Image 1 (cartoon, rainbow, N blue to C red):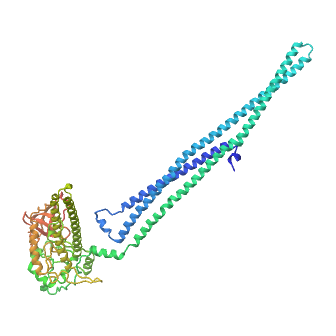
Image 2 (image 1 turned 90 degrees about the horizontal axis):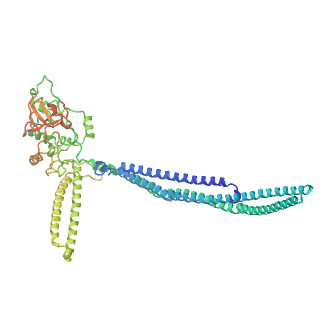
Length: 606
């Protein structure tokens, strides 16, 4: 089966067919190129998607990814990033192995095709020239034969005419002989040209054209083989990345299997555990005996002596309820007909309205413990160094973390000291490399840093030991141990007193702890003496008289105009100032506040 023998007369059709083959090849190249663009775009979108959902560094979101489910999600994002990389590999391999190679091959194919069809056209032109020569020789032979025949007839006519002279007859005879000779010469030339043409024609159709068409056939078959190989490469490029993609998917599946719901639940406990005990039973308040009515723990009229007497009897029960009960706000202003002064103790002794047990239970489930220290009176400042503003369990974690960080810094300093010591030894052995004495100052400095860090570690370890001594002991099964912060079990002094109900400092600790806290409060107050006073954010008018008998509060008279330096934070207390030396908290419902419009977040309320 050869195009040269079977398609010897289909030169034009072969030219069209080979051009169509090149067009198909170019179309396939375009297809692969668009596929690579899709792979690149897909990989880019996958990378952007993975990056979009990665937790931001040094953010709260990053801390939340300590749970196994979140870690599995991070692993999924990383695997998807690797998955995107494999699609980039597909694009690169298809571009280098298919697109580039086929583009170069198409250029070579076009040149080869052009050369073959040029040879074919040249052969056709040659055979056409031979045919024209044959036709010319044939016409000349035909013409000479006709001329010789006419000359012969003219000679015979002259020879038969008796009136024609002998000279005319001889002339006609010579002319006839000349024409016959020319006819013979034309015959011989035509015969020679015909033989030559037949030979050229045989060579053309049996040698030249078959050879050219065979080369065109081989060229076309190579094109077909090449496009088949490219399609195979197209599949192999995808097949090569399947194992790695499979590993990526296996990684995602493994990450999913690593999710441990029990571990996540334990992490939630570690993250939010306060270390406090649940509230004790609420005592029955007998309202049938007015003289024995229990005084509210948050009453602003309680004196120090009264509160201490109450603590002796109720510290075991009510004292443990404070982390879960909201701060008591003063009652709404009394009606106009009733004068605040007519009521015993006035409005400065508001009683907490009783709430249904379901409300207490909701507060127990939803409210967060509010833990403050003396520093909290100066709001907006940094937390205490010993983390005493945190619940015990969270404080223990923070202290342990701080101890670990300090130990790492000590190890770094010790490594630096060892390196300097080795360098000094080298300088001693080889003085030309440097002066050993130049390193003494650095060694001394590093030694001082290590000593400072060790003192810091001792300080934080002491706090950590104190906190661990206060925490309840829990066995394999979680069981509560009562008396976590009772005075007999925790004789050491608290570094930061917890704000129970109000900023006035009415605590529910034992008497011995309260005395010690008073001494520490003086130290804390000294720390804040040098701080700049808070700016004034508005004014207020006292609606009722309030006698601030407790720490942190200030007395006001009805109708008095004062300056507001801190608005209500949601706890029912507003911080005001009378002059540079007198400031404190008053119930928000006892004053009418006018905030400065230029102050940040200012609003006027009553």
